[in-house]
Length: 261
Image (cartoon, rainbow, N blue to C red; front, side, top):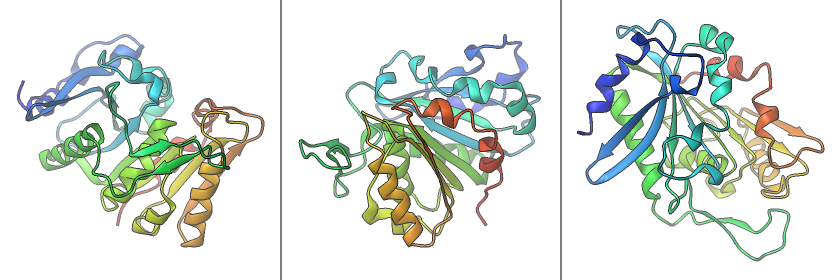
């Protein structure tokens, strides 16, 4: 399969009859050189190749890593498959999958006992292979012309929340808005994107896996720079705060309300 073969397939996905399940996310591959990015793609209802659509990229957590091109849909896919969301907010939604031996970011965990749970970000390291493929894929889609370049959105949960914060500083001019869930990031890199795009952060205050201090630190830093940041913290909620985030009635409207100037 050639690198660009996935692009042509986007213009045919919505013409096939599909049941109301996760199989509506079409299995696809993005190949760049010897590297392959597995992903699932949901196209809008009544898809038209003559239109430009918003693009939503969602990064899964560490438990959904692999090469089956299926597990990444465990959390979040139902939200985007919701008939009301698909009708009101037509978009191309992509769930890439990260292999077991890779990660969405250069964050790592130390043995330090602090409010962050020992999480640190290696901001000097090169971007990892899979998130770099995600950026290449986005650039390829934008070059093809079927995506509204002013409305590219990024979100993720847990490991994907960390990845969201990292991709924001790696490519601050690429995205229109972001929604990291129970993640964290590098405060010293916030200035690269703080005034360029709004961010809505979610976290549970009883999270035993990624302590809430990670999101609190990022939000505090964003606020100090004058960024447009929203923060929703769920009392008594553990690591699965994505369930609450995806139940937020205003999330999709907020995402679609943002666009680059």
